[in-house]
Image (cartoon, rainbow, N blue to C red; front, side, top):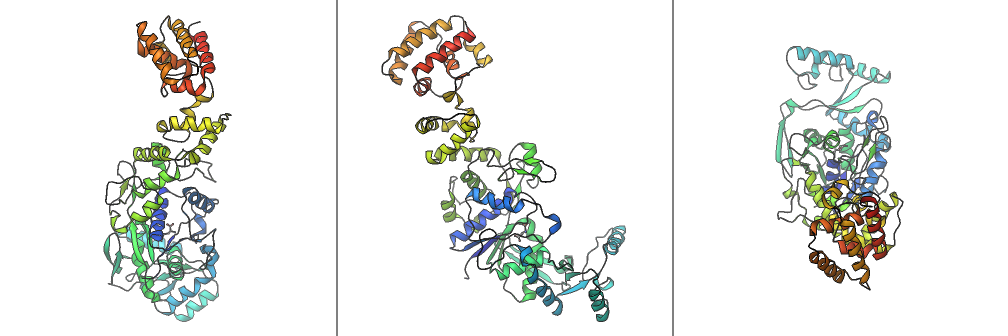
Length: 505
Ligand code: GLU
């Protein structure tokens, strides 16, 4: 087998959808598993759809995700340039070759003329198609004299080059996921390959680049399957060996009804883009996994399993494990439903597994957003204590703020439920017990406080939660004696007094 070389070939028309990230991931896994190369090619032939910032966004997203390209835009390599707009001069010779060899023709039909044809067909409840049936009655190099064609081109008349499908031909695409997919050429439109402005369309540029960049496998979304017969025919026309094709199942909405779109994310409250994106035209902001507090490892693991499984029940797999276990045979044919709960679950798992080295800088950054600084040892202590309660990185503040800053408000519902008249006096007594244990010991203090609560026949839930409200501001958090240990006895005493002064002065 030739060397495995695969590519991810996005068009810079906006932020990268997570479906695109999954396509790139599967390409990466396949390349690495086979000791192959993984390329980033930017397909920007359609300048009308170009969006400023999209290319930079794509590169930044993969940097964040830790998916590295071996060659491509931003990296370079022996098959460059890797951006189609920079390859523009090389495509015309291929369009010319197809025309000279009877695989393509010039077409001069104006948009108005084609529109009229479409309307005519519609009136007869048909769909207009530029094909073997209609091309003979349209304005192209098959119907005009050679002289006229030359003259039109010389005079600068706009034209397109269209592919000329042979009539009545069954075209088969061998797909590694779907098996053989066959379609009759009679159902296919003579697609535009090249325009008189010198720009190829996606189809021609894609095939020329895949061939000249020695791509061995084309792994891409199912939405490109309808284009595959044309691509197969183009390889045949050029006399080139076609790469192997694998069309990946769609990513579906959580309820399984249709393709996952940007709007679903906005509507259902989850990101569909790896990084936050601000639309340069409208200023609309779409949320990103990074900004929502996901770890890239979790996003990768979650995406890997949307459409593929290792054939076992194993769910937690880092990038290296995925490289080992990935196989195209285990990619499913049917669409994969996006599952927000599962995404959260993965993130929670990865936060728990993350080393302090990985976690602490992020934790520190969350605190900094609230103007709080802490010693690394203390941060590590709180992280170890609290990470099992954290699903997303910003929760490191929400779940732990009271370790760093004393509460100034007390959850009224919790106070109403737990704080009874007389609680203040008992808390002061309990505080004396806490202060009497020198040096402080979690176990010993716990036992003595419990003795006091039982000896005075106090309602355990009420009194212990009141103590907690004084330290935390709410009825939440880990073991009370862990909190006392973390913030220290003098700070505990200050918080208890302040709560009493506020709630039961
Ligand atoms: N430029 C196409 C896209 O935006 C690439 C499709 C392909 O991989 O052939 O997805």
